[in-house]
Length: 248
Image 1 (cartoon, rainbow, N blue to C red):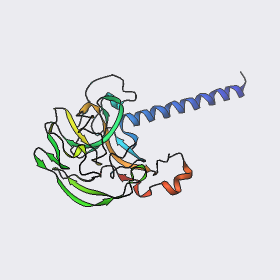
Image 2: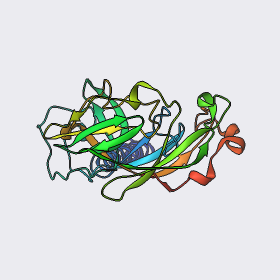
Image 3: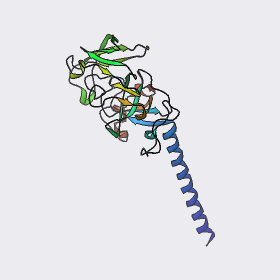
Image 4: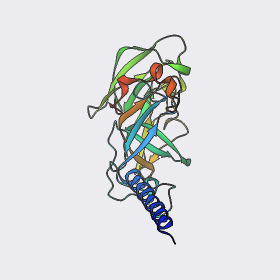
């Protein structure tokens, strides 16, 4: 083999090794540390908007089989487990279809009694503090041509965030009392009248299904634009949301 062919072969092999190493590093980071996640719906408005891209901390709650790409059935439960706290915005696998990721706020802990009455959240029989803060006009496909009321809720542990009240008489504004089973959590969206959550088909979420805790928004683009549509960046990028906390 000529020296030229040897050099070409060696250079190709070096490129392959670098590519494999980069892929392995990306898998390790995604599995153990941070996973990117995009917001596909308005269920967490105004905390999170469609077109927000954020990092999810994988180590916040420990690791389950859902922490690993393709979710191989390597083990059950969690290792190095830490429990979600009330008020956390967390990504989890939908209990009825574990191929689907959801993002909601942790409202009920194991053993809690949760109920919504006339739009007011009750935890263990006590009304959560709820104050009218102002109004908000949703953007894009969620804009109905008028502003909607914004309420600030403050949970018993002091975590505070805003919720939207699109309809004062929606099905989710008056619920039965839910008793959260051991090892499970009750999740709700901040957009209370436009969120499929534990009040409805989502049900209680097992600890094993948690992927991680939302941390920071690293990119945000409006009007359902794709991040790849760079020609829309001048008009659609939400610079004010870059590096904003994904919790509140």
